[in-house]
Length: 92
Image (cartoon, rainbow, N blue to C red):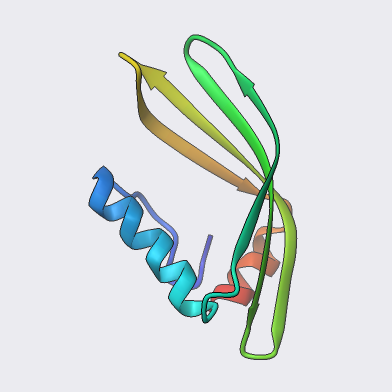
């Protein structure tokens, strides 16, 4: 993702902290709208749009989140932004 937000997040507290940082950096303007979901036995795939404003910049792009599921829990997730350079610039 860039902007100091890239990297692995492990556990509930790290994930909640990550979303808290997104909210703080966007002064609460971030909005995520789920467009579609595909669920299977081992994976869940979500397509969403992210909208936010920060320091005179606007973010409006689609992202894909792929989660691996095992034992009824999310075990890992990968996020794929539409434009990773724009995303990194926005959050930097």
